[in-house]
Amino acid sequence: MKAVVFTAKNTVQFTDLPDPKPGPGEVLVEVKASGICHTDFEVLKDNYGTGAFPVVPGHEYAGIVVEVGSGVANVKTGDRVAVDPNLECGTCRACKRGWAHLCENLGAYGVTTHGGFAERSLVKASAVHSIGEMSFLQAALAEPMGCVLNGLDAVYAPWMEEALIFGAGPMGLLMGLALKAQGVAKVAFVDLAQSRLELASSFGFDPVAAGSDALRAWHRRADLAVEATGVPAVASQLTNYMANGGKGLFFGVCPSDARIDIAPFELFRRQLTLAGSHSLNHNIPRSLEVIASLGSEIDRAVSHRLPLEEISKILESKPPRDSLKVQWQRD
Ligand SMILES: [Zn+2]
Ligand SMILES: [Zn+2]
Image 1 (cartoon, rainbow, N blue to C red):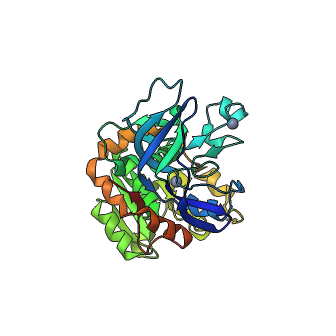
Image 2: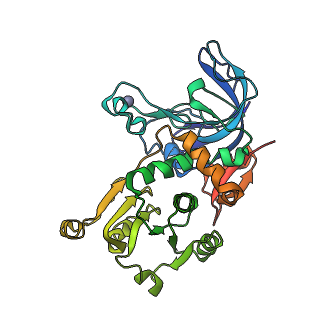
Image 3: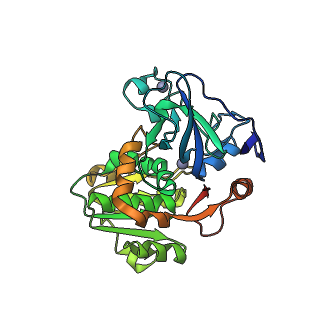
């Protein structure tokens, strides 16, 4: 089968791999849609230190079950499914608390084990979730939406009326859509790129240009402020935009050695809450429900639908300019 393989640190190959056979408890998924994530580039650079080369990247994918191994009862050939990529140890303290995403020995399809940028992917039967009639494009957004919902679990409260999101990239937009689905009346986006602000506004969000008076008007106003750029200078400003009693979420991936200044007095006096969130925690079914409730509007979060060979080239360089979610898709 055709596959993108990270053969070693900083080395990408578009190549042939032997067809995998499902063992006991496993199923073989014919991949139909698979999204590129920032994480794929980090895996290639070995920034997670997992060093699991060679590895097929891709952890945001969906497809059709084409073969099931022995002992698999709840999944059958022909099932349309989305994959939950996280592989937790099940025995560490975090796992015992039900925090799979914080597992001390966390692995994942597409990170430490072959993932979704191959024609077929071998996964545990417990990792697949039925998607019914949902399109594969939407089902491949279940993993990133799962990360968004995990982030909101850390900060969302029903009293929130106004949210400000820094970064109108694909993850920021999914966050905005999820907040809208939660009933948050006003969601505004800050970005440097005019094209991204226009896109945010086409979804019904308020566009706010970086450095503008409109942004200054958000001073200490947001019930929820979200950092979705991964830029430390942006992260360092987050509290300035949080209302008294407001919450802030560090959702973007800043460089691991970045540091920012926070005024403890301000957190105290204005009772601010700052939170982080990582990955998703077995919430693919809820994620699929949120996606279904949003309907076809969410499809516009995917800007590119490409053949697998093109995906390989992008993983060797960088995503196309002004792209949102980039997916490999096939019939
Ligand atoms: Zn991802
Ligand atoms: Zn664990």
